[in-house]
Image 1 (spheres, rainbow, N blue to C red):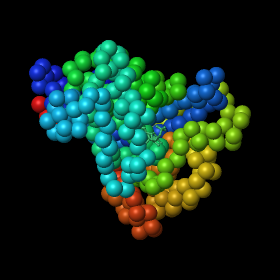
Image 2 (spheres, protein in one colour):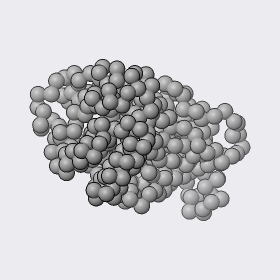
Image 3 (tube, helix red, strand yellow):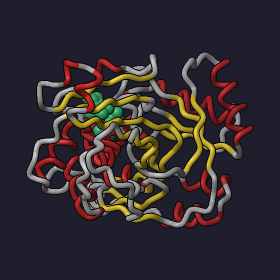
Length: 329
Ligand code: ATP
């Protein structure tokens, strides 16, 4: 893996807040096979990290005490904030929060409880098929590792990430990567392009397990081996958006559209407004549209807003995995 840049400055005796940024992912290729014996679906997927990011700030006890007396009671407190169009009420603050779970898993590895506070500033829509919770878990791992001077190895970080969720290892490494297994086995792939995307999130999230269950119902004879991503990997090496558009693939799209028929209309609309290709992102409901350039993406976003979609975003990829943006020391 490319190691998350945690920096090298000594923090001994100065345990101040650390902020780490992690990106949303989209699946350029999502090939899904029949469920394995353990219930997980085998995947062949190509992830891309895009410039829509959550920030996670880890503060060790002692620093948190000086900011707010309410943090001095031990344990870990999770505080979630973010853009007003994000459904923050749907984000748990207890151990069900993937960032909180990351803190428990990292503490267990080092045989100690990580006491302090995690502030999650969300820009990634919740339950949007963009792996926002996984991004927060990856960011929390890197931020806590530095705030608590744990010096965790990359291998251990990747192992804990895979235990936390299938998309978390990718959120650590970022860029563009091939994911196999249930998505947790990741390796960076050659990608020479700068790709421009228009994103249309939905205010109401879609449950990933529900979409997989619907996939199983629609495709009871899915092959054990998921479809390979060779054509898409070739298109990434050309850097040509038109080539990439032809090879985008999502096996979950039909299930997501069956559960949310309006997504089909949205994809047609985006393509008729000039997108090279529209696609459901992962398990949805966010739809993504590939464009030729930044200008093209801005034009398409304007057209979609004029057609009645009030929340339309532009982002490019690939961007870095979880990385330090502020060390308050
Ligand atoms: P998945 O990663 O399961 O495919 P997703 O990418 O569609 O999901 P997420 O934003 O990761 O969507 O949220 C899925 C669910 O995870 C949410 O409904 C929420 O209950 C829970 N969750 C746990 N931690 C977080 C977090 N830090 N941010 C957002 N949701 C979280």
